[in-house]
Image (cartoon, rainbow, N blue to C red; front, top):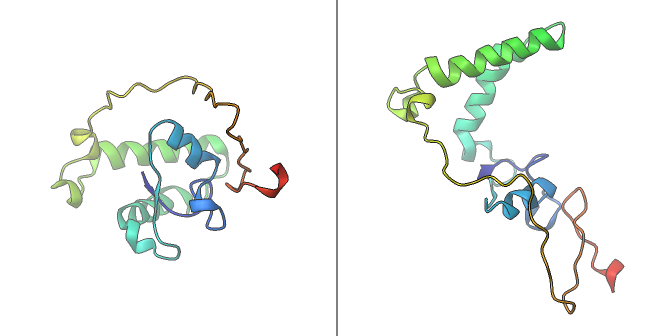
Length: 134
Protein backbone atom coordinates (compact mmCIF):
# COMPACT_ATOMS: atom_id res chain seq x y z
CA UNK A 1 0.00 0.00 0.00
CA UNK A 2 1.48 3.33 -1.10
CA UNK A 3 0.99 6.02 1.54
CA UNK A 4 2.37 9.34 2.65
CA UNK A 5 4.72 9.70 5.61
CA UNK A 6 2.34 11.37 8.03
CA UNK A 7 0.42 9.90 10.91
CA UNK A 8 -1.04 7.36 11.16
CA UNK A 9 0.66 5.76 8.14
CA UNK A 10 4.28 6.70 8.62
CA UNK A 11 6.75 8.42 10.90
CA UNK A 12 9.96 9.71 9.35
CA UNK A 13 11.82 9.36 12.68
CA UNK A 14 10.87 5.69 13.18
CA UNK A 15 12.65 2.57 11.97
CA UNK A 16 11.76 2.21 8.26
CA UNK A 17 9.08 4.88 8.92
CA UNK A 18 6.77 2.22 10.42
CA UNK A 19 4.04 3.04 12.94
CA UNK A 20 1.72 0.73 14.85
CA UNK A 21 -0.66 0.90 11.88
CA UNK A 22 2.19 -0.06 9.53
CA UNK A 23 3.03 -3.08 11.66
CA UNK A 24 -0.63 -4.09 11.70
CA UNK A 25 -0.68 -3.89 7.88
CA UNK A 26 2.39 -6.12 7.75
CA UNK A 27 0.71 -8.66 10.05
CA UNK A 28 -2.20 -8.71 7.57
CA UNK A 29 0.20 -9.32 4.67
CA UNK A 30 0.09 -5.73 3.37
CA UNK A 31 3.49 -4.12 2.80
CA UNK A 32 3.58 -0.34 3.34
CA UNK A 33 5.44 1.68 0.72
CA UNK A 34 6.06 5.34 1.52
CA UNK A 35 6.47 8.38 -0.67
CA UNK A 36 9.74 10.21 -0.19
CA UNK A 37 9.41 12.90 2.50
CA UNK A 38 8.30 16.28 1.08
CA UNK A 39 7.38 14.79 -2.32
CA UNK A 40 3.56 14.77 -2.58
CA UNK A 41 3.84 14.46 -6.37
CA UNK A 42 4.81 10.79 -5.87
CA UNK A 43 1.23 10.14 -4.79
CA UNK A 44 -0.50 12.62 -7.08
CA UNK A 45 -3.82 10.80 -7.46
CA UNK A 46 -4.22 10.66 -3.71
CA UNK A 47 -3.32 14.34 -3.33
CA UNK A 48 -5.85 15.25 -6.04
CA UNK A 49 -8.58 13.27 -4.23
CA UNK A 50 -7.75 15.16 -1.02
CA UNK A 51 -8.02 18.49 -2.84
CA UNK A 52 -11.45 17.56 -4.20
CA UNK A 53 -12.55 16.21 -0.81
CA UNK A 54 -11.57 19.43 0.95
CA UNK A 55 -13.36 21.56 -1.66
CA UNK A 56 -16.54 19.49 -1.34
CA UNK A 57 -16.61 18.87 2.41
CA UNK A 58 -14.18 20.97 4.41
CA UNK A 59 -14.13 24.49 3.03
CA UNK A 60 -16.10 25.71 4.89
CA UNK A 61 -16.71 23.09 7.56
CA UNK A 62 -20.31 22.24 8.39
CA UNK A 63 -21.79 23.53 11.63
CA UNK A 64 -22.25 20.07 13.16
CA UNK A 65 -21.05 16.47 12.72
CA UNK A 66 -24.31 15.17 11.19
CA UNK A 67 -24.19 17.72 8.39
CA UNK A 68 -20.46 17.13 7.94
CA UNK A 69 -21.07 13.36 7.63
CA UNK A 70 -23.81 13.92 5.04
CA UNK A 71 -21.41 16.07 2.99
CA UNK A 72 -18.77 13.36 3.22
CA UNK A 73 -21.24 10.60 2.24
CA UNK A 74 -22.39 12.65 -0.75
CA UNK A 75 -18.78 13.19 -1.84
CA UNK A 76 -17.93 9.47 -1.54
CA UNK A 77 -20.99 8.50 -3.61
CA UNK A 78 -20.25 11.06 -6.33
CA UNK A 79 -16.50 10.33 -6.38
CA UNK A 80 -16.93 6.55 -6.63
CA UNK A 81 -20.20 6.08 -8.52
CA UNK A 82 -21.02 9.18 -10.57
CA UNK A 83 -17.91 11.08 -11.63
CA UNK A 84 -15.71 9.47 -14.31
CA UNK A 85 -11.94 9.51 -13.82
CA UNK A 86 -9.36 10.08 -16.55
CA UNK A 87 -6.98 7.59 -14.95
CA UNK A 88 -9.70 4.92 -15.32
CA UNK A 89 -10.46 5.58 -19.00
CA UNK A 90 -13.42 7.80 -18.06
CA UNK A 91 -14.98 5.07 -15.93
CA UNK A 92 -16.07 5.36 -12.33
CA UNK A 93 -14.08 3.65 -9.57
CA UNK A 94 -17.15 1.58 -8.61
CA UNK A 95 -17.42 0.21 -12.15
CA UNK A 96 -13.87 -1.18 -12.17
CA UNK A 97 -13.48 -2.19 -8.52
CA UNK A 98 -13.10 -5.90 -7.75
CA UNK A 99 -13.70 -7.12 -4.22
CA UNK A 100 -10.74 -8.84 -2.65
CA UNK A 101 -11.08 -12.57 -2.12
CA UNK A 102 -8.45 -12.47 0.62
CA UNK A 103 -10.02 -13.28 3.99
CA UNK A 104 -9.76 -10.53 6.57
CA UNK A 105 -9.15 -11.96 10.04
CA UNK A 106 -11.21 -10.61 12.90
CA UNK A 107 -8.23 -11.15 15.18
CA UNK A 108 -4.57 -11.56 14.30
CA UNK A 109 -3.15 -14.67 15.98
CA UNK A 110 -0.34 -14.25 18.49
CA UNK A 111 3.10 -15.11 17.23
CA UNK A 112 4.92 -17.89 19.05
CA UNK A 113 8.65 -17.25 19.24
CA UNK A 114 11.27 -19.66 20.51
CA UNK A 115 12.72 -18.75 23.94
CA UNK A 116 16.08 -17.58 22.53
CA UNK A 117 14.41 -14.78 20.51
CA UNK A 118 13.98 -11.46 22.31
CA UNK A 119 10.58 -9.90 21.69
CA UNK A 120 10.49 -6.08 21.70
CA UNK A 121 7.46 -3.82 21.85
CA UNK A 122 7.00 -1.12 19.22
CA UNK A 123 6.15 2.31 20.63
CA UNK A 124 3.27 4.39 19.28
CA UNK A 125 5.68 6.36 17.10
CA UNK A 126 7.04 3.13 15.54
CA UNK A 127 10.35 3.05 17.43
CA UNK A 128 11.92 0.35 19.61
CA UNK A 129 14.37 0.81 22.48
CA UNK A 130 17.07 -1.86 22.26
CA UNK A 131 19.06 -0.73 25.31
CA UNK A 132 15.99 -0.97 27.56
CA UNK A 133 15.92 -4.76 26.99
CA UNK A 134 19.62 -5.62 27.35
